[in-house]
Figure 1 (tube, chains in turn yellow, cyan):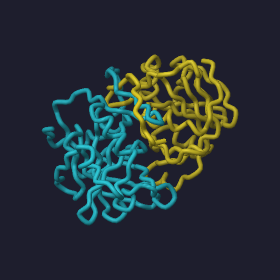
Figure 2 (cartoon, each protein chain N blue to C red):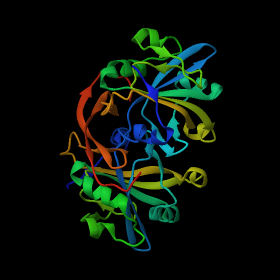
Figure 3 (tube, rainbow over the protein chains, first blue to last red):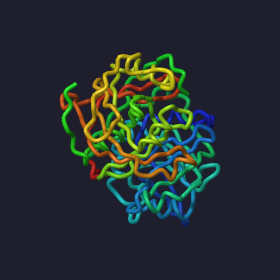
Figure 4 (cartoon, rainbow over the protein chains, first blue to last red):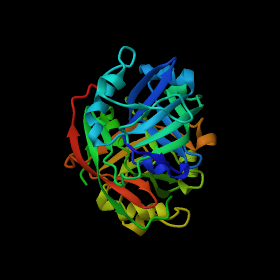
Length: 178
Length: 178
């Protein structure tokens, strides 16, 4: 996909709706990717994100050791690959090769961006104080990329045990909320 | 709505998809409600939730002082009331009366449950160590209620500045993920 730089101040609108994302890391030259639904915005600008990466995930050690990652947002077209990422461990498998995901170099982090995802956020870990207790990492988005051709992304939203809600129509209401 | 008790172990499936929720509190006999999109699951069971309640919100002081709240999940039918809650402050207004929301007594907390929402979660604040830095509260769900008649809730998901994605169809994939 042809992604363009995206204003950091608008990043919250990508993650607030709660899409399943693919978190990528690279450590010692080995890339990894995991599916993640437990994330929330923490601050608008600079955009800060809190997310849970279980210490049972291979990505946990990567994230902790390198202090960086990318968050890639897939649409329904990628649903089967997303589930495949969730069903497997990067400890033994190169999921990019196994599931046909194309890694692209990022600009600020070593973690790869996934070409097939419509948006990618390069992130630095800025706070690990909640990691021991909740496996909760605080990230700051340092660079964002979005395919401007995708206006109403059909993101997928996990409802548990393999059920995913696919994003439907968008309605507009006169809100004063950011 | 006729809501029934819902297993705590399944609560994550209600919040993982990222719906806009209505957070209710009661303090000194005064009820309040705010719209919230910045929340994430932190643990499956007992279900723990992390959420950002800005200290610019009237609910912030209520939540901090009482240590309890309810999270109510609306569907698209309530979208205009949700936006109205987001556009106003409980400091001067009884939003329940103003926007036609019906408070019902909860079983474990003083915060009211909103009858028009299809699900309500009674919550206790269990960790405030991230409040000063991020306005981030850790909640534990102590009781959950869901209307069992609503199978595919048309939840709303904020995309920023009054744009809401309405939950579309649900697809099922063979996932080993919880």
